[in-house]
Amino acid sequence: MKTLFYFAFLTTIFYSCSPKIGSTITSRQAPLSDTDFVLVLQQQDNFINDGIEIGSIKSGDNGLSTNCTYFEVVDKLKQLARQNGGNIIKIIEHKSPDRWSSCERLTAKIYRVPEFRKHEKEIEWTKNRKLTWEDFKGTPKSTLNPEVAAQTYCGFGFQSNYVNILTKTKIFVTNTFNCNLSWVRPDQKDRADLLEHEQGHFDLCEVYARQLRKKLQEKKLTVFNINPDADIIFKDTYALYLDRQELYEKETSHGLNRQRQIEWTTTISKELNELSNYTK
Image (cartoon, rainbow, N blue to C red; front, side, top):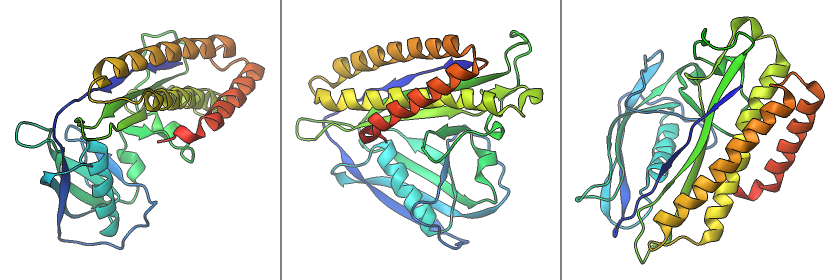
């Protein structure tokens, strides 16, 4: 079973800047590779350190330029964390663009923990990361139909950069699985077929996230049309996505129809391959 959510952020402004990155390192660890995963936790996320606190990192305003959206800043902070051996970034302060700066300004602490997955609140879709039952950290809903064995919360949304008449529009589409809202009944954790069905919900979400990227890129958004046109494209794509998720549930009988589940898994995989040029 699935539960869906969506989010969208549209921003337009007439100046931008690039981030200034700094760090204060007190306990440097062996560096990670450029491809190693770094978990980002937000201000509101509870975190109990079960590893080593390495130090702090910070992004600030470095003048008029580009490349200081939230996603671009976080990527730079991840690089700095890896260089110092950190696999968790815990944001402790986040200043959004305002009249004094159009940059996203972040202050965070970095940690090296034995197992970052236990601290995950959300999971961004990647082809090499498949869901496990340990990712379903929510509490089963006792008020629901007792035949409901699991529930997946996933959704996609987008955010733009701060554009002006001289800069190119950048669109960032994300697809996430919410760990703390998703759940499975304890007596169902031995069912590989059920896990495959729940993975299908997440994969189908990625199909439409890629479709959204494709449509937004093809629209050639500018400062003059980004707010109305991007919103229309998003809502149209999301409506199609909701209908497809309902069809998936119906035709697979919530994963109980094994033959139809296999067919849907194959179809979703094919669609992901067809949209491979629109991965994040």
